[in-house]
Image 1 (cartoon, one colour):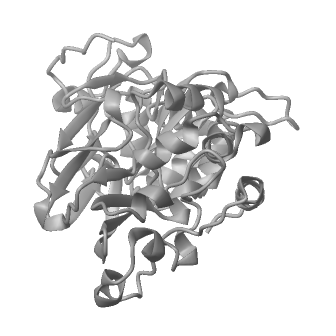
Image 2: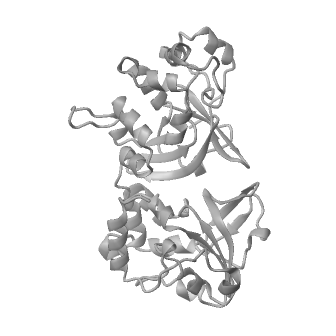
Image 3: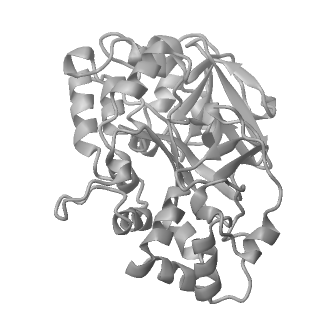
Length: 384
């Protein structure tokens, strides 16, 4: 998938002197897995071998090979690749190799619960207490099951002493002091490097075009290269492809750099706002000057009309939440005029151009008639 972490992971695994490779083989039948303990089942598949059970201080095997029963939420290797490499080092390496004392045990125990909890026993908004002491939250919408922000990709892998559910993100308890310290202290990549790691290439390119990130050759120091912290709602390449191509083409013309900058800054807020800090109908002030609206429901988390597909990707100067649509502020006269001038379609698609909340930003006082008609209600901002 992504090569940037391979040296980090190889080094970590060597220094930890791991004696057990964890995680399951999806190809193994449940009948076969029934005869194996959790630790034996986890040892089968090399695709899930970063989540490890042994180090000099922690031995998950004593838990998962015991009588149990236990429930294990097992992150894949790709889940670890979503983490900043500095965070990975602090979580997994022993203190002598740059790790944080107690972090590995904390992280492992937050993925394990007492009891055999199969998928048919889960319910929406259920709280599951983990061995770390904190709870994880179950969200069920249709066929999708989430554990906190992690999606269950394979459920109910039965072992002799419990059950394994494979997930696509690493779970980190937000109210644990050790983990909170790691989140603040350990990230190495800044917003741009993290976006590259997530393969958000169109976003990276447009940030450069708008001079929002450093360009050493041009002597530019971009806003998002600063200390921040920042929260970035980051559209995927597919999200940019959904935008009317006439509008996208105009936005990337040199004469329209201000409009491009405004669009991008509408995806950025000051402060590190992780998903546990969001609430339904919350208004988030963006650097563009308008608000974005948070909606939380059984269908997940939305920013305006965009769905958050990957939350809480940490960087050295903030956090990224990946979204599936580009956010376009409708209460910005310059952007509205550009859309009127450049759109290849005759009408604005609400899918591509979700509405924003009105702002009193001076630059937006001269609204077009279209923006005035679309936005007439004043929202009450949630105190920060």
